[in-house]
Image 1 (cartoon, rainbow, N blue to C red):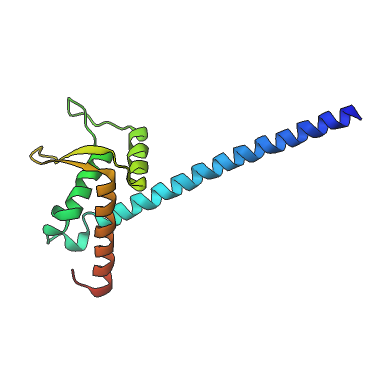
Image 2 (image 1 turned 90 degrees about the horizontal axis):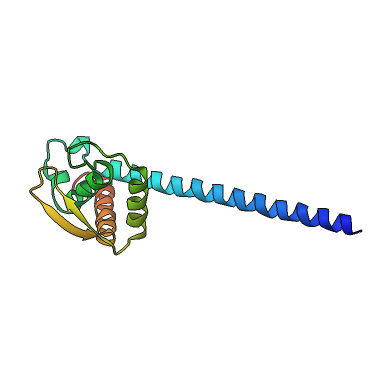
Length: 143
């Protein structure tokens, strides 16, 4: 009888380990899906081709801050002007943005003439306002 108990315990333990592994993989996939949806919304929002003649569309208000944030996340450069590709930076920034963290970051324009200190929370609120504006624009055909 003791041999059956030990095998049964090992079997149950293996089931729990396997369940934990599957749960971790599911969490990774959900996280990737959430970040993908966030990036898709960003790309839907910024630099719309139908507004290419209207420079005010991406250069003012909430959209301008979001454009600077996009550059901060995806277009980082080093001291010598070399591109920095750091996926951990991208994922960390997007997670803080999605969570609306109160951490502050420094956003700089490409020509380095404009510098803004904003929190991820403020960015998230600007994102929601700009996306709502875009959805309303699509529904009414005007801004």
